[in-house]
Length: 251
Ligand code: CO
Image 1 (cartoon, rainbow, N blue to C red):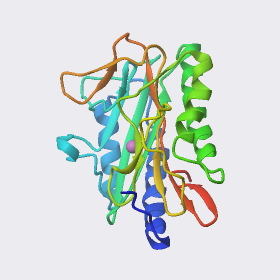
Image 2: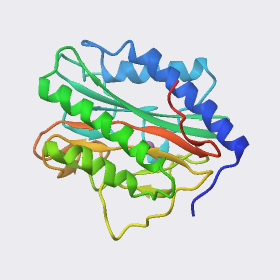
Image 3: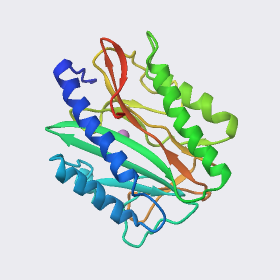
Image 4: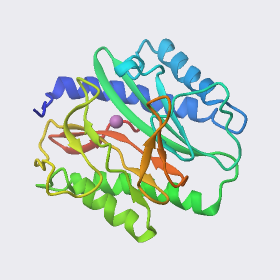
């Protein structure tokens, strides 16, 4: 069931989202060559402590950290690791959720470390563009959820990138994962509800530079490309308000 939110709830999810956006500003400025993914997770967690919010990823189905740090061929759900030191040429997706007084926001940014290959830079730019095109598509009158998949497909297909099919965006706000599922590929077999006022959605293209075939890491979390190609992930929490679509996890 899709849980529509009232004005008060959207206002609280907005507050949660603004704290998350600030976290990306603050932690993002520390992300460079030489830092470990574990240290990045520590920075996220200390930011949360300072702002009296929680990180609901930690403990979610036994997940051990407040952030997912997915490097290079890990597309999503990379577990932070002391021994994983970022180096020039890496692409890091940092996926973080915040719980502010029970209201949840969810966002992902991808960071190019040092000097990355020109192709990797283009890849990251195109996946970010796919996110914004998807957001724009659902903001149109009488749009349906699969407008996301249509927009993502339209943006990434010319480059031959892969679209992950095994994971989706989702409703968010009162819980981390709510209905509806928001897939990034078009299917006639998935529900396609109309976008309505009161919806709060985590829109999140998960894309690979090569084949979309993936496997699960030994830790049972990390989602890794079979062909070793890079993955990239961008995500915003958005709300459909009486004034139209609003990107909440942006300052
Ligand atoms: Co999400």
